[in-house]
Image (cartoon, one colour):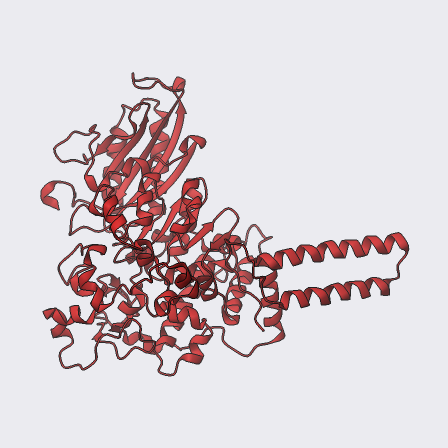
Length: 631
């Protein structure tokens, strides 16, 4: 990597780039320091092929509607020994008449430019804070030929960030789980489970800063994900590669079903699919299909067991047995890797070593290749073709249906992404705090259990306390950002510990049996399970909020259903209308208080009776994921 001049080993910041909008050429790179191409100058417009989408990511679609904006984005690595490149872009526009030096190519009334930092470390909030100040100063010059300030920014960032550790406040700066829960309420847990299932999740809102803020905050709830879990999250091919050949896509029957198959679809083909005549999806990790369908899979980007991904990390037992390194690691053990479709996997095949001090710290994962803690976290979710794209440009739309992409968590501001809903498993409307899921089986899989509802309600209550006190708001430990992340860490630790127990059906029922069954055949669980993590012995199995049902649980579930299901909302609106009518009628005809109470009681009885009935058969095609009332 260093030999081609693309990777500067001096510090965490790789490049400072200015992207502008040209009236004839569109978005293009106008300046880069150091040069993006080693043999070109600082003002070259040329880009590495892997980074051809950089101008469209740094200068987002619809940016002209906003005076300024901020974008987080990921770029693929430029070489086999490089990880994901993290980008932060600050966009601004200024009136052309305000410029002191107006260049000849400025022909429009406004000038639109973005200054972006390309870094090897995911310090999004910290980079944004520094970049916003410099971008403001750069525009205040009103002469974009004055680039010395950008070179100084490069030197300053590499000097100040060199040696920075990926810990706590530095990584999570600007990401507030507290605000996320205040906005999404219990749906935050639905989003958490969606990503655990490695589904295709699309976030949608404008402007981009709200989009990337919500998406990255959800990811920050996963222990270690921001620090070490995104290094392989951008391994995709730019358009024009073999995966984008129309003839190839047409020749692969059911290609989209192959990469987006749900857990329940793998176990058994639903009647709807059989009646429609569509081909049933084949398991991705099937030993018989691995050899014959290799053209559908992205080739491994690394070949060394010491790297993040390699041939022996396919989780196919036959591949694992062929690796001499894995043979040595498993020598003397009779256990084999559990079958992907075995609901009760056997003994894990390897032992994950603890750090030298036995406490804390991270080590290289034996199978995942990620830097893991003693519990095996972060889970290897964003590996093997599961992408994380905080912002996706319109030019990257083809990735939604690329056969080499098995899933994604992506953000978009263009309505085209939302309209093509068949390309995503879930669409998250950030503005309305809604989660739309088209597949009925997936909605059932994500139904929150009573224990889950207790957990979500516990978070919401603690977050909303002291909201009226502007001085104490958010300053305490309980209900604060770090406290919320600690709760989700406990939730995930307990889920993993419960999955390791022999007689775990009762323990896992509190998480939802359909959800657990779907999760156990995901890539991230099978990789995690393939190692032993001795520190898990200290974790108490069982849901943190398990326990006997009570009247409070019934009220909680009713409240949840009324607030979040389409049917419940209609009933709630009808209740409000009925109540107002009763009051108005009582005043008009002099109805007694007892009569009004009788009418209200009758309305309540009718309401509960309707709520307990099963959902209508002719349900909307595209409805919000919500927990229905269970008998």
